[in-house]
Length: 182
Image (tube, rainbow, N blue to C red; front, side, top):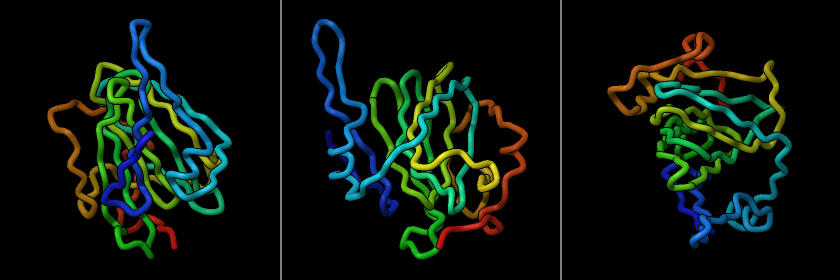
């Protein structure tokens, strides 16, 4: 397993070691000991989520405020998405910046997203199955959403895709008005 730092402090791209032979492939999708070594943190995951989305489905930018803030370890097991995180930590050197990456069943990359970030993704393939671990339970009373097309953040989403966006996500807050993390 190897990892790469991103332009956002604390966000990591994790690439598992893949063993391929005539039968197919094998990889360790999660190993607590290696994860702790890579992140320098001991996280307990309490919930696994799995979604399927059609091409053009844009989910996010979602986050939960303390005391229910969530860290996430995300990956795609079928299809391809453009995955995005935005730093909402007021004390961070990368506050207000975003990072985007293609996650796919083919590249098998994972993204580690600590607490304090908004997260979203756009489905690029006909369908995509997205799975992720969270460090805290879903708490609707703590959930917030920032508009995916907020001009202050200015995320460069892939073009020429007809978007499918939930009503809830269309009602997201502007970056300037959204609650942040200390």
